[in-house]
Length: 360
Image (tube, rainbow, N blue to C red; front, side):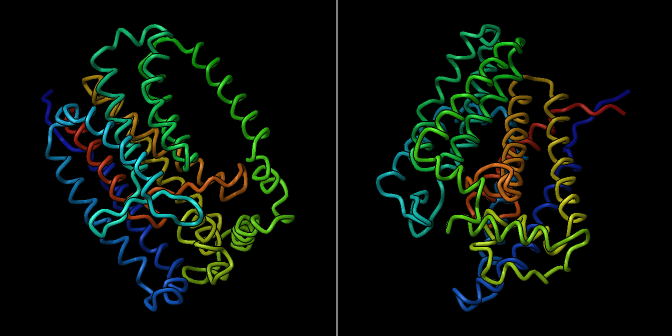
């Protein structure tokens, strides 16, 4: 048996499939809205395609680099992300009532997307340098405490992204720790705190909107999304035939794009999308499992955790399984910053896959 270095072409194919499908659905979903707002049906598609192009350039660069190279910049990336997320609270531009964007040299981007990548790099670097510290619960808590600053800064105006960051950290620390019982206790504790926080604060109204969307004006988007899902049936109305995207589902190309997928392609199309995401997550898990060092395994696991959490939360919101949190569907929802950083993460994962030894 000989061994040869390779790149995970299955993962690359999944990325291209999801992104291609995302661009088709984005055009179908946003053409009406884009024509009304900007006088061009391809306004959103064009911007997303440009971001995807930039993302693929970054992906290519990352694949060519040895993934250990990223460890050098983990601390700087974490610090930069924290500073930029903090800056958003003071000089950020607002959209839909929350300040999440920074304008730099005419380009607007969301620092919270950088924060997700920075946390993956930072935790992978720290854990791989001190793996023995992960054997104790105290060591785990100490490490999780180091991401508290970025969590607090992001949570100030973007709780949903802060939850994703904590989820990524939790998965990476859980994977690197040999003990499971403390994690189960910690998870139950955090879940109880979250329930108390949600039901006991101003977010209580959001819970009421979730339970009874028909009684609130702000439940309109949720209701229209559910109408779209219900009217799609088993095979959908056909690509481009959605009624709900014609101004009924507000900003359908963002968080609620999955409801339009359900309306146009039906349950069959929705399941197919989830299967492709499932395969993508599975490939990342395979890379994490077979990588020869801890740093690479944690990088792949962090990227896997990010995609998995975001897909689950987005679909849960669109189907009204959980209260509306404003989380996008990776590679499919409109958002230039999101696509660029997701492709950067995929480039890192593909770079890790090059280190996996494939036997003949």
